Image (cartoon, rainbow, N blue to C red):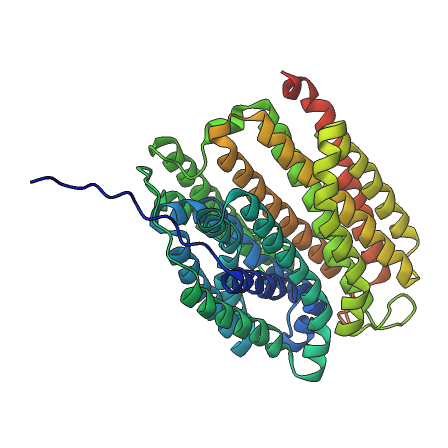
Length: 467
């Protein structure tokens, strides 16, 4: 008796409907991610929270996304991209629903925490596209998905104001969440299953949980310390707790066979420079991203603009478009001039812009122009650092190294936003609670000086990076 060995079936090709569903999903996720920034002053007023607590609303989603970035693709390879994508979208939908129904800050933060799972949609969509499309079509499909996710950020910036002002801020989260759930349903019905890839590597769940706890404890500690709501002894206890979680994560990563982040990468001079520069650049940009909409929202009593959420979204739109375009600019510039040259140029632009804005911020066009320039500088610099890292580390470490920079980028933006919020809180009027003009001037100046630290980092790490 003979046995016939059958070849594995050829993968089912994707048609226009499933590719369109993945694109709509990316568009809705980008929208859901970006609605908070223009509406942050409104959320602070509606929820009765301080600027530091408001910054935490915007940062919580980013922290979860940074933690999931290193593991989303690995889970997709092991269990199938479609299977993992649908489960992450269930978390995102639950988070959007919680945010839409949130009666106060704690529930809203929990919703944002769950929504952070959206960051895994992009690598998982790439797995599906790569599996079910030939190479020449998969590249175009990947470009469409990325472009729609980026475009969703622009859509969110535009629609947040009209939705919040004509319906309520709850609907800012509800409407994109409905589209996410509908698109995920179409993906489930139309996209064929993809077979899991053969993989012996285990997911470093202890490392994931410890890093999550470290980042969240750091963020909560940062906002409470910046708010001045903790006595010195309690603040010290928070710092010890964060240090303990971080030490536990390092210990786990050094011992497990397949760590979430290979800490040996940090010994590479190129990685040291990339991490430090990414942290400094994004901290400065995080300050700008928080301060500009706050100043637009201040009542026009000598220095504010009394802008509503819709107007703030329109003011921020050029910066959002410029930031999206700067990704391509950063990659091209890094190939031609080198990552350090791009970072130095971006540093000079950001520092000069912020110092100028500290003295001249009486016209709306000045803020709009400053946001455009700093968005281009930060986007180009961080993209250049990412692309430079890809060529500076072995191919097997590309995913780990870039994930580490993504985590660093998120931490930098979060620290910058919280630092700016603390400066506004420290300079608030004791009667009205509104930040003074000098507090904004101080914030812009500190952002410029923070950006200028990149020049020192480049100088100190130049020799090691060359070697």
